[in-house]
Structures are given as structure tokens and as C-alpha cells.
Image (cartoon, rainbow, N blue to C red; front, side, top):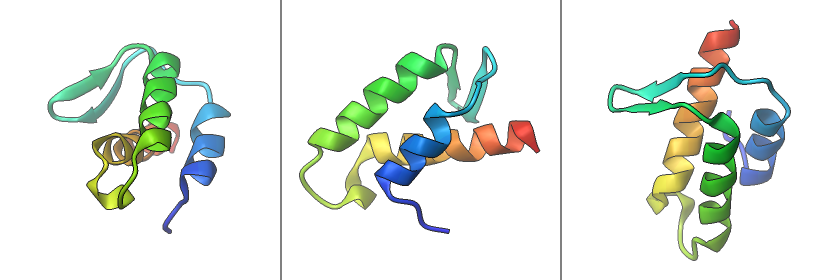
Length: 71
């Protein structure tokens, strides 16, 4: 399922997050709320295709990791 930034925002910001979220082998998020705010701000200012936005990729990975935790 392809989500828009708004849909992903609603999904991620309305969840409780554990202290550490491993979103990929090189990245562990220790403050999910701060991480999400910064990444969504970066997505908002990105001018071209979201597929080329690193913040969007990190948010999608974060969403997948968060969903794995709560399964």
C-alpha cells in the first residue's frame, strides 16, 4: 500500500513508540517523536519527487519498523 505523507504522518504520530527503534542496520532511533518531527519537516520542504527524498525513505523505513514491533 502506497501512503501519502499525510497518511504516514497520521499513522506514525498517533502511535506510542518504544525507546529504541531499529529502522535499518545502520540506524537506531532513540527519540521517535523528535525524529518524526524533523523527518516530516524535511519532507514538507522537499521540492521534487518524494522517491528522491531521503527523509521520506527514512519515514517509510520507520513506519515498517514500527509496524513490525507492534505485530
